[in-house]
Amino acid sequence: MKTILEAKGLNKVYGSDQKNTVLKNVNLEIVEGEFVSVMGPSGSGKSTLLYNISGLDQMTAGTVILEGQDVSFLSEKDLSRLRLHKIGFIFQQIHLLKNLSIFDNIILSAYLAKEDSRKEINKRAIELMKQTDIAELADHDITQASGGQLQRVAICRALINNPPIIFGDEPTGALNSKAAGEIMDILANINDSGTTILLVTHDIKVAAKTERVIYMLDGQIVSEKQLGKYKKEVNNIKEREAKLSKWLSGMGF
Ligand SMILES: Nc1ncnc2c1ncn2[C@@H]1O[C@H](COP(=O)(O)OP(=O)(O)OP(=O)(O)O)[C@@H](O)[C@H]1O
Image (cartoon, rainbow, N blue to C red; front, side, top):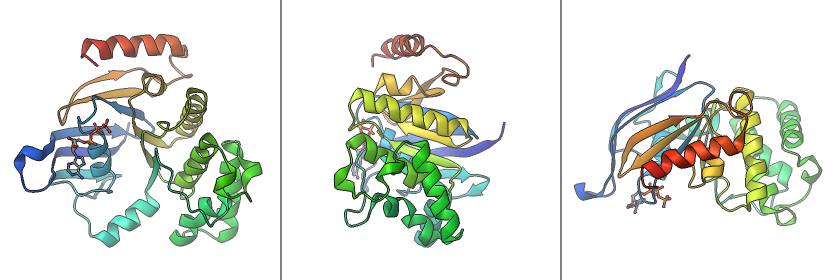
């Protein structure tokens, strides 16, 4: 199995006061095709970890290798290129552009990346919209869609440049449990087709559909649990949730 992302000795201090050390010598390895979630109490450093390994924020010290390339301290220009071509992001707050149609929101970054022809990009956008069951919304604007539908738009947008890895910060956090479950099923399907996914969540139901759960406490990864691929290996979601719940309660979560 090939490593897609490796973080070594990651430290993050906010400001100049060492007391604000939020990541403390974090090491993490993600294998190509994995579906990983990060859990832990509020303030334990989950989002900070995600932002620092994905190039959204600059760590204080450490190394991040993505697909064999050292991306630890890239220039702003190289970082934007990396984010455009290699990484997809899905956030709790969706940040779509109000004056563009849903279709245009999805294709925008691919037009900017200029890797493929507009014809190919449009075709891929249509496929992604079908896959996430929002094809009929192409010409709508974003005020005409539900929260769950908008999160599907965000997923299509994250995938439009075919990134090998996508990061999610509470991607289902703003959704009701039915919509959250549907989004997780979509992400599981996307993962099945080969995209590596790492997401941060507070929700046991969400983490139970991922393959490996990492637990953070006070700026460190203190434990992890292998659940196996949802549907492929351990299918029973109640069983997965119970296993996870037991493990988490053992750590006082
Ligand atoms: N920009 C910032 N400047 C200073 N401190 C920050 C900043 N961002 C986060 N922190 C602090 O870093 C610590 C970790 O925050 P982080 O958001 O990574 O935790 P988290 O585990 O994701 O929390 P939550 O589950 O509540 O989202 C917290 O104490 C937070 O207050």
